[in-house]
Length: 294
Image 1 (cartoon, rainbow, N blue to C red):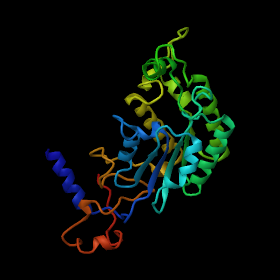
Image 2 (image 1 turned 30 degrees about the vertical axis):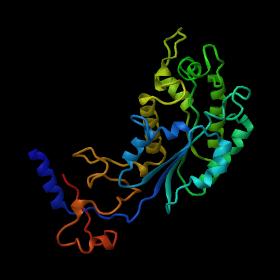
Image 3 (image 1 turned 90 degrees about the vertical axis):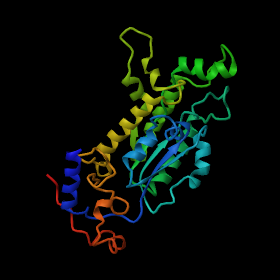
Image 4 (image 1 turned 180 degrees about the horizontal axis):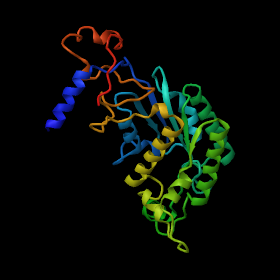
């Protein structure tokens, strides 16, 4: 406890952070249920991302459960961020497009049409955001999907409207679209399987633990997605990485830092009896720069 109070005293003595922002940019997440559930599931990847950008950007989850690229393309303008700027966007479709044309014609989108719609979505998002990440659809864990998703709804032995092979074809196209539009790409189809490979000579698919029903992410799957996204941001867009406070590990206090994103409004330890009447009016321009605390 005494060390904690000593740190607070040192921070106060060092002075306030240099600058702050009057508004926040957006981080936009576009996709289907795998994105939508990223904010509602335990340990959801979108919630973790919101924590990473806390106090610096608004993470807007525009995941629409059940949507394919045909529908998403039609409603895209209603999903874009109303903010002045969008600093990062993820585009993650294909799990529904890849549904079987005969068994699930309502959600199925042919591969060439998927390519067209995904390209259109990405290009329109690129008009507003320089940092766009395209995700491939994940692999379908057929055994879990059959046992947990299909058979309880349609009966024992009902055919699968999604398959591992079909999801691979759509994942390949997602990668091609990302390359053609100069976007970053995360191949979740490959990364999920590589994260928990089967033993040599075994037909088991231990990567099924990353899904709770063979299609949607489990808590462990959400953690994997967040790790992969954060790793890519660090590699491709390092200015967006929020470095935590060296004393508390928090990313939303005055000890944290981010090259591209200023904190929204002054942190409380930048506000004093002397400046509380003026500090809110000039974006922190009147604040002396914080000296680095040893």
